Image (cartoon, rainbow, N blue to C red; front, side):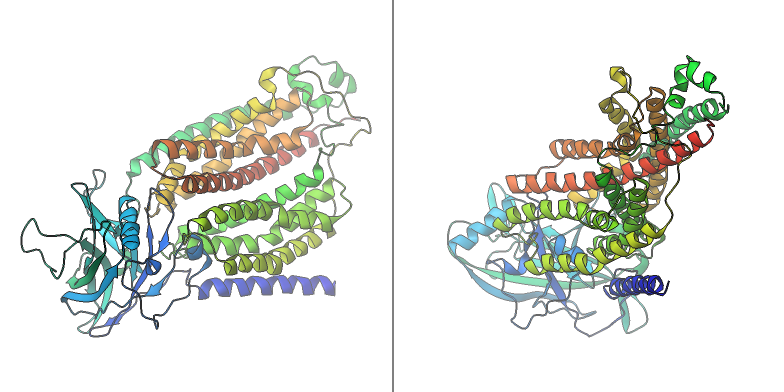
Length: 615
């Protein structure tokens, strides 16, 4: 008993340390930064990115821009930022709080032919530049037909193409919006950037047709300059400064999708109510009635001695369910923290970093649930089951990510994770995730085995021939379509947010859709499992998982269709990275929905046969 208590406190200690790391990383909501007028404020260079190639590059490592000072600081970045390709370094731009400046020269940069061609190639690929001031990304203002008010798009163009000629934006006009705290202190509420291209010493256009800094196959010297304007803005508060970055969408689309989902839920609820009333209303106690009844709806009663027979590959099934519990723990906690507002969703890479921490902490729940299911199957080695639970999903993720990383590394993109990041992930898995899974499996193995309401016959019953429409593939097609119909609209907006550079902020609708998704999965899986049992097929364990998990296949197919019809991704590496990431997300989604479907079916089958009294 003392050993168990010590292990329990060890688990709590590990969780407390991880939560402390999350808090220290600034992933939770933060307070406003108060700036004193006259103080210098650093501008940080980050990266360039393009929605055509999806391959970011560190801005400070470009050969044709002004080199940064050797003393430039590099702030600490979290794992989520590393995974999204951030490489932040302090710039040499001189910005003073509350003080305007114009035509400030940053440097005169000699550019070779190779460097000029590199700049031209990046401009033609529509690369955008992301800088950071007071934790806000550089942005350009725009208006859309959907939203008439001003919105912000992250980044500004590296260059421009006019009349077939390529020009580099070598002059940057900063427009910094601020709100006053008192006479000498302010808070920044907006960071607008207006880039332009000027030739030679010119800094302000003297005519409409002014000269621009062209990049071509020749050596040249580029002068980089900038201007700073501080603009008082009382309409935007510090708490609302991120709202202009959020994905602009018509809320009516979300509500139409939710109403459609409610119709699906009500329809499935009616079907399920009929099934339950018909199946459980009678208590069959007479064997003659049980085996001589010709009603096909009573076929589930004929297999009462086989329905809880151990499934094939049960040693793989239990770890897969444990992995699903771990992924669900991560998804639910991350969603709730973002919905409540505790999680600082505007922090770059914050949600990804927090989700990673929650995945590690979910190892305890994964080990515990996997051990309980494994014990139901009368497994002999809970240690082996725990190791499989801890390594099954991470191995797939690690292998796929490694292959992607190798291809991205050949392009010298900042999206390629450094070796130290890989080492950190491996250490976190070995030091945190694996021990938590083992602790959870230990406590789960100590629990009494779940007893089923009916005994299992030593001789398996022959499963009769089933019509084609009762096949596994047809069930998967039907079982995956309805859950996907519930989440279709939010999947669309999430893809638009991730791959088109817009910030997703509709966590209120995402919360509602998640609840409807869970209800739909439960109802669809229970109904299809019941129809399967009525056809005297007792192999429902894997069927309940794959039927509900088939929604991941629909998500993957839609992601591919979105790539073909909406996105303009060029290049093999960018396409491979998109497909691989879509596969990993769809796989995780399918494992989560499959786990929900199985536990719903398991509870239903236990309840169904507990009402059946047969000698």
